[in-house]
Image (cartoon, rainbow, N blue to C red; front, side, top):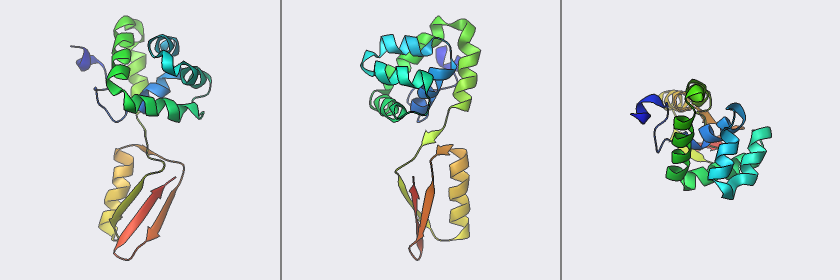
Length: 145
């Protein structure tokens, strides 16, 4: 019933970025989360006013550590606010970026592998500040910043 309406499933890799994005874009969501996830109230309050603050990484790390608890908070807010449900779903679509900063990936050093890698960046909605690629002969090392 519920999961058919919400455009995000439990266990989604997008959950951390979606929740942090909803803090400043959906009325009342940050207040609700502050009450339900009191151990993150400082980070949640910062996200409400500055969605690109350092607290975003801390909060998203918490969500990755406790995804079930955080998803349940989203479900409870969604069910309690029928007038905001469309807005929540629209914001979920626009906030479904996955932060891959600090990750390292290795791909084959050929045009096909690079094209597949580039397509994956777009398809998975990877977010990063910069990228460095180092040629290692038959492989490429990709460093996300």
